Length: 205
Image 1 (cartoon, rainbow, N blue to C red):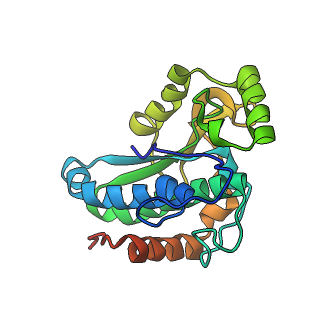
Image 2: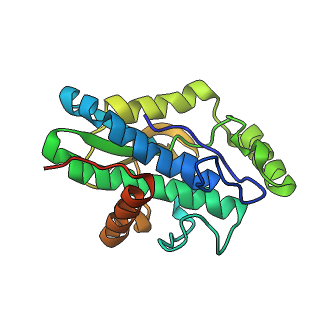
């Protein structure tokens, strides 16, 4: 389950391995880890679940600027990294069917995780007020993620999330993929960039 995440760091920050922190944590790390674990998923005919977010639908990814060296904004970096994760989940599902591995993305909803604690002042304040008003406790958020992992069918365009209140909360079910996640050329391009920048190689027939 690809669930590690950072959100809205005020300044562009690089991790020790040189990746921009949002993309490194929310996408490249998941891409590389999944590759390393793929033999286990293959043996068990398992499922890979990648946690995305509502913000994945707010921006369009530029494959020439995955490190945000040209343009950086805290929420933009977060949203694009979550879109990258969703593109990965969708592409992996298509490729993984050849070896019995399924993949699905999930938006857990608005959750009281404290992930917005690094955001700039105004963004953090608004986020905290939203959490107080519509945020889920962690156990309810887990329900949506577990549904994606165990119950849902991972079809070609499957995406799981809360089905009420603009995907903020509610019973888990199938929700619409952002348009950007349906762009085959974008999914393929990001996949190739992921391999090039992480050095991992997926062994598909």
